[in-house]
Image (cartoon, rainbow, N blue to C red; front, side):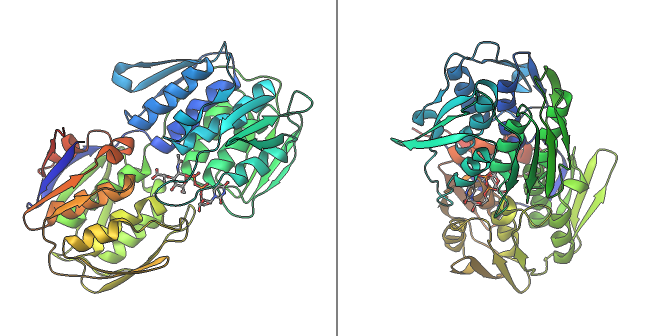
Amino acid sequence: MDSILVTGNGPLNGQIEIAGAKNACLTLMPATLLTEEPLTLTNAPRLSDIRTMTTLLQSLGAEVSSLQEGKVIAMSSHDIHNHTAEYDIVRKMRASILVLGPMLARDGHAIVSLPGGCAIGARPVDLHLKALEALGAEMELKDGYVHAKAPKGHLQGGVVDFPIVSVGATENVLMAATLAKGTTVINNAAREPEIVDLADCLRRMGAQISGDGTSTITVEGVDRLNGATHPVVTDRIELGTYMLAPAVCGGEVELLGGRLDLVGAFVEKLDQAGVAVEETAGGLLVKRRNDRVNAVDVTTEPFPGFPTDLQAQIMALLCTADGTSVLEEKIFENRFMHAPELIRMGAQIDVSGGTATVTGVDRLKGAPVMATDLRASVSLILAGLAAEGETTVSRVYHLDRGYEQVVRKLSGVGAKIERIQGE
Ligand code: EPZ
């Protein structure tokens, strides 16, 4: 397994280009199942999760080709001959559940393996199933698979009331509703930019959707959807991650393609911590105001609140802040696995349930550490950028799921970082 070697170094300066959003692409790709016509995505990120979704869609019979070194994904679901998403693929990536709604909407039946838990929590899919049942689907759980069918051969518009906000379940039922007969209203819908991007793509395909980006989304079902070409929205989590690099190390970095509206709550926290963010013609320019940032308290919430996917990364910054920061993780039950690794680097962190209390120290010390999940892995790299000495992050396959070319991007602004081939 490969590892990444980071050597604490001085300020970073230059530009980093932000890629298309992994979490948008993973819901846009299954949308190909809603039409027999070609659906093409541009500005796609080049990540292992995208390759996993490609394999899944191809296993169903979709044609998926990756063009222009992976930045364009051309898909056609003219001939879907298999309606079973196998455990072997689904277990690798939870987002596989997002083929359920589109397959049900298109052909009235689907069998999808339950994803199983993951490192950051149990992450059940009950809300996906209940939402699709509100559209008339019948679900049967058997041998670890969901057997879903639409008794009338098609879904019926209905009212979906989510007890808690779920990004994936909102995406699943939104896609299904586009072909349901009648009107669907989704209450307490997720408001993430990836939902709006999906709705934009579906509208290009002929869907009738309104209210996306708010808590109530309304969909008028249509008989069929056509093909389209859609640019994947900028990845706000990659953006926020790299905004933290100059915050941790000093210097000034411009994030090309960065959009303030995608990272509002995050930028507010950076401002409180003493990190200036300025809009430029090309994106966002970031630099810290002083040599040391201020401690800030963070609570993760659904969008537009502070994103859980940036919690590990900002913790890396707060390890050397001036003062004590309290981080509350409200979305997932076990998302502090980066804390013990940061403690190995000299951080002072006390974790109790969903709360982590970080007391800033002057400087971290490089150490061998282990990545435990996607966002934890990049948090350790951020910590290593300014730590004294060398940090080796192992199990970087986690990183490859969500960050394209992290070594090239950080080296490009002066970081001392390299990838070490594993055995
Ligand atoms: C999406 O996961 C993202 N993944 C996650 O990003 C992100 O952390 C999460 O949304 C929250 O923003 C993709 O988009 C592929 P949820 P998702 O349904 O849809 C519980 C990353 O690092 N829940 O909004 O799975 C769930 O356990 C990944 O890129 C149920 O109880 O998240 C969690 O506690 C990590 N039942 C909460 O809701 C369900 O049926 C929010 O989960 C579904 C979810």
